[in-house]
Length: 159
Image (cartoon, rainbow, N blue to C red; front, side, top):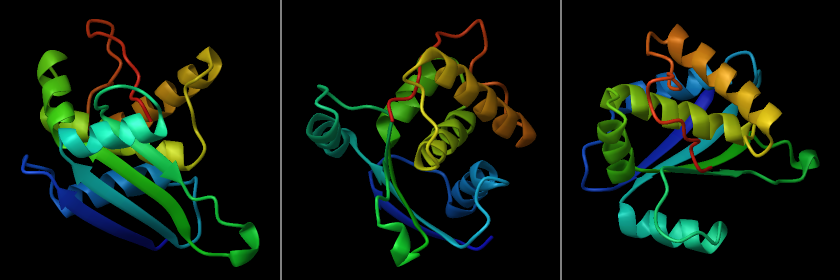
């Protein structure tokens, strides 16, 4: 699979390097996408994420990750999978609050957002369990710990 990844950084916060982000996106796509794929990933600050979250989800304040799957007609046969937006300050603060390594949490949010582009969701309990299991498999294969450890507060990314 050939991945075209457009990364836009609009945050003053430190963010992972492009190689790590590419590795995380590719891990989420592995075996689930065989053709050329294009993904845009924007790393933002609190103000931009708050605006997006309020505009698209009608929820107050920022969230950690939002995904916008492409809804192009299939007959166009374009490789655009969609857009992911991750809020760097929220990811940093969540990692601190949950006593997680920052890199591991970035990997989780990137995988989570990518899976949403592929159609995975966590609205229903069965969907949430399936998505969490898949995220855990992907992240542990990348040598990160399970993001849903029992001793940590369980919360879903808001994508």
